[in-house]
Image (cartoon, rainbow, N blue to C red):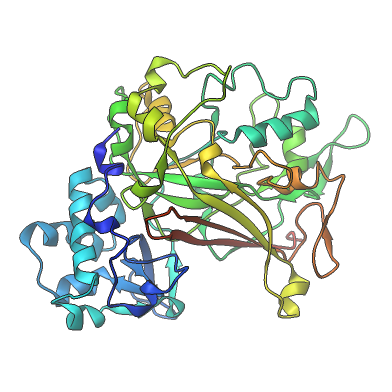
Length: 441
């Protein structure tokens, strides 16, 4: 594991304050200790998408920042692709280079700052911009690292053997569809498909068991050449950062189609991610030990390292929130459905990279790795409605009197996440929201 993703430096100092006042407010997702990247443009404009950094409730426009301010030669070189709107090119830089820019931006945004007056002209309120995907996503792989989700769902279909024999040995995954990935705020039509009928023949129509999945998504920075692999020693260096990910799922379509090759139309109609990429460097204070439960097999050598055992996991709180169409019409806020923590994942992000490439598969800058649904071990910590409603048998009762077993048309499902630890600043990932529209005619 690269020390650049686990070692603390001056950018993590909890005493740092920004001259952007909103970044200092308690509970802000984007204090100066975070500095995530995203692509934006001013709402209603036709300007090219540009890369910015979230700071408080503002966006620092890196194109303007490069033009307006004086930077060292090395930092100016790192800003060039960002000023051009090409986050992928920056993601592919080395870990030390990416960390150097983080240090420079932290210095420019903290109190006191020599270039404050100039940089203030480069700020844009977040509520006056529209966001797009943070980078070009060439390929998308979805894993199944949430053992509590896998166990709960497995019990619905295989009560005596919920986990298949390979689960604790190999990071299970499947290749998803990159073309239908959208950014937070995405709306999509309820999918159509085949579902099991009363007899031998299936029926065709809109999914009646539409669900969400609470996941984390990891974006690849520097990839590997075909035929090579990324071992555990360098796997963290290949990771640029994380986003929230909602792997929308048509459970009735999935139940009919998944054997023998796994998900297809039940998953590929839409995937939503949050717009801000929180870098692995920003997550350094929240790294924690990766431990297997007593009696479980230890990972094979190619998936194991001392540093992964010491700090491979991330202590990150994950939440799902729901706002129905009726709640929205009545001006009622979303309600929280559950809360879990990413430290309960059965495999680390580094292990996903190492396993994905061990056969010579080449990853590329911007490739997205989903973690699978992150449920907790306790009752009510399911990361999907399939779990929370016990397969649709026990409806959830909402505060306004509505009930849900699966998602209804007009529902907006919101994912949120944050990291907090005594002695360090709280940082968040922002929101990942998506709305279900009626099936097309």
